Image (cartoon, rainbow, N blue to C red; front, top):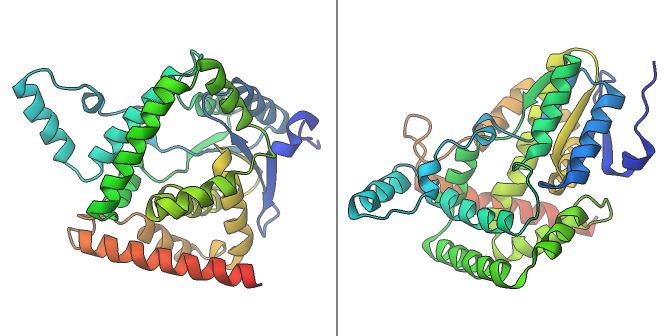
Amino acid sequence: MKRIIPAAIRSKVVHLNNCKGQNVYLIGTAHFSKKSLGDVTELIKNLRPKGVFLEMCEARMEFKNEKLLTLPKTFKEFREWISLVRSEEGNFLYLIISSYMSKLVERIDTTEEIDDEFSVAKEEALKLGSVVTYGDRPIDVTMKRAWTGLSIYEKLKFMFALSIQSLYVKFFISKADMNEVVEEFTDPSMNFEEGVRIFERIFPWMTACFVTERDMFLTIKLAQSLEELESGDMVAVVGAGHLGGIEKFWNDNQELLQSPEEMSKLCHTLMQYPGSNDGKFTVRDMRAYAKRFLKELKQKRSQGNRG
């Protein structure tokens, strides 16, 4: 029986396939968007895929360290809080980004849980007996790589920029404005690449770590998950900002995506952070990698523009 993507959401779906003829239907979503919840539900119900792939890791499905978001009231609590923040590289970045996200959530007039479209997708998948895959890089790895790859100056610049943005959101953005912005993210005509390029000029390594590297990781995990199904198709639910990057990496790297060894090798590289590999991978290694990665990325894009 041929299954058809509903016309109302067809423009939001990217179709990919592998050498075995299996199909992937990528749908881009906006977090906190009720429209995205409906789009995801409709796509899965209509396509009845054998597998559903989520741009999530297990840690993001359940916030593990609520103490990080609880500001200390006594000197003893302050020492414990500092110890917790310093216990692992990346906790501090998690704290400041989570604090900023909480400001955004306060301005959204909704009762939905964060990333609720992924919970909805999982629920629909389980109803159909579909295989559910969490395909994102673990959030703690992303945070550690992002934070330790920055110089002291870059860390201060990022914290200052986020503080100014938080104040702007708090005092100048109404709930109506914020809800309008959220729903605009579901519009296929939205130019996410331009927004990424602007952010990349200011914070190149943060952009590479949170967007470019994760696009690569998600694409590899998507290819591996599809291969594990052996037959049948898959619906992949990802943030709209990852849609273009995943599609491009999939189309440009078919040779790599057909080599289990090469995929595992690249995944291993993207999972390294200071303290990993039995402590052999250091902060110096991370910063050297960040510089090399950004240099190679700039060269590739320069060559692409000339082509």
